[in-house]
Length: 429
Image 1: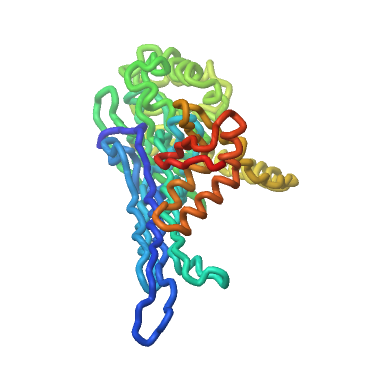
Image 2: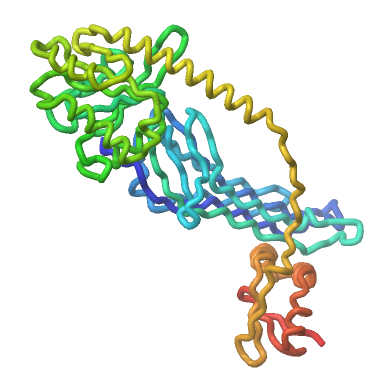
């Protein structure tokens, strides 16, 4: 499957259904009263972290995803059917950003994690809802709210506890095949692994997720080869195993080969070299490797694991050290989490928004004035001007933010026209 780890999608939740005006008409029920039901809510768009998905390939050609609208209300006070939610299953490690603001909306890091990225609009209310002691026969009803809409960027960085890094043909695919529950296709070419492969290592009662990250080459941090496509997947790994081949035919200068990986990690992000890195020298089963082992031991401070992934020599010791480091990091993360949650939370009261500050009125002709307001945009969509009760209610919304008063204060005269999102109103005396 092709590696696709970034794409842009337009997401649109469903609109709420409209409430209706209806009357109960039955022979044995005189003055049956209002009978119009509410509209159903629009469908949500929900993101789901799925450990069975490992690429964004499925979504690369989806330019837009639209959830179903809610149905309109029905007679007999029946609420319309709500629109079905749309679930988008994404790989673990997917970060979702708002295209317009570049804000990180959510990181999907756990299997089964859900996030409602676009909420469906609430259904409008029918006239049965508005019945009261002072208005027993209301003709009030509402349109459904519009569903949320976002244009988002999906960026995938694979999630793993341990990342295998190294030059091509270091033996990463062979090693992960030996120690985990995956089998990688192995071949003698530059990019043996074309997409990161995740496997699970069972040690005692714990599981570690390990990623076979595609081979790096010199210049990867500058984008050479498939550099940036792969380096970003290392960022989420807690531990790195730097695998290097002892085979003289793979490395003319093993010290230079060792430095290539470190330099590429440093150039991409200095934070990568700050991670715990375990050096493992592979292919010790091949004759003539002793000289390369001595060269590596001279330049590294930490322990060098000499292994053969092919015949399992030294592999258990490598995994044991990795596991101990994994447990230590887990304990440190737990302490950080406890310290974070122990801090006293400061609760700030949410202040009600003053919609009068949002109001703008612009003179577009001698006797015409255009009204711009987030508040009035919402209520223009919400209140259909098809009944007397609805027109009265709409006028009340205009009075709430003093539309007419504000227009008069900047020069509008009685008889002038207010243009409000497709509606026209005449200013009274």
